[in-house]
Amino acid sequence: MRLDAHDLRDIGLFKYYRLVRRWACHQYELKDADLELLIYLDCLGRFTRKEFIDGVYAYSWDKHRWERLRSEGWITVWRERNRTTQKYAIYATSHKTKHMILRIYRILLGEEDIPVGSTSVYSKNISYTDKVYNKAIDDMIKDPER
Image (cartoon, rainbow, N blue to C red; front, side, top):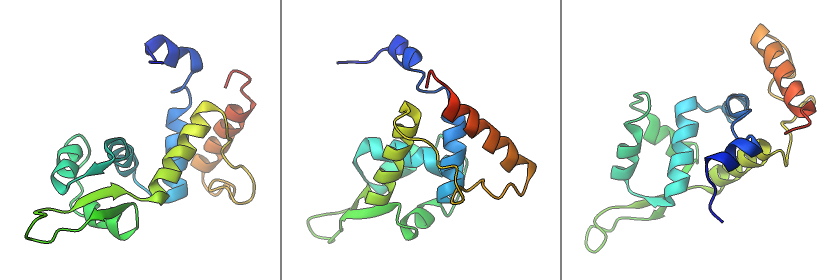
């Protein structure tokens, strides 16, 4: 079954996208552009360094993004380069990345809630922003149409 624009609007998939994206970036210590790039790369499946560079054009410039995402375990090597038969390495998003993205999808679909207990990233209410996000998360969880 193929989804169209009306189906997405009817299920309200993007109603809380900004809130969920901000929570995920805060929870997993990622930048917004990194999160969206990881979603793009996960949709590709396997990719080369050139495909990564092509995907980065739509995001803010970050010279160290590739090495940071690899060293933090968001991107893994799927096939090494051996200089004779394989001229370039092939990469894939890691299990950690796939788990994070699936969790974001479950939250957007209302199958799971953003954690609000003492382990929540906004639970300390240190700044005004934390308080605002706590209120928005509470409103999202209480939304009967979610």
